[in-house]
Image (cartoon, rainbow, N blue to C red):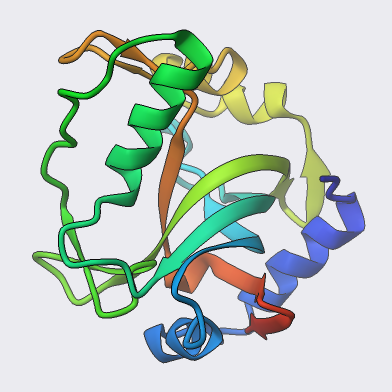
Length: 198
């Protein structure tokens, strides 16, 4: 899964045109899906910088292979099931007691479209399998080290030295990475031999 500098710059340019995917775009794309499908997404997300650098704008462009969901049973929790499988298979841990905590969002009729509970903002809920990223600042691709220099120390450490997922409450190690990305930051989604894009 590679992302070239030219593709990153193109994604930022597409996003800056002011068009955005809406929930109906994702619902239509996944309408025939019953369960899970693999998909490819491209997103352009603003990087949160330290207060001293708030005048700067850096965008993280990511191409990712993800799992998207639709028409899941009323009590199905895709994240919870994935963590249980991962903890048991990859780490040999008994995760049967694991329960996910509450979230700031709620799933809509299309499971991978989630809505913020307090605001009228929609997000794409996806489990990430692998991803490649580039960072764009002032119309040019820049290094991760340069981006880290504009972040808070804690955020810079997380960027440069990411940790494997661990659930402290249940003392579980797993490899499940879920992201809820604002739909306005999604440039394209390719799933089920179709593409939705801005």
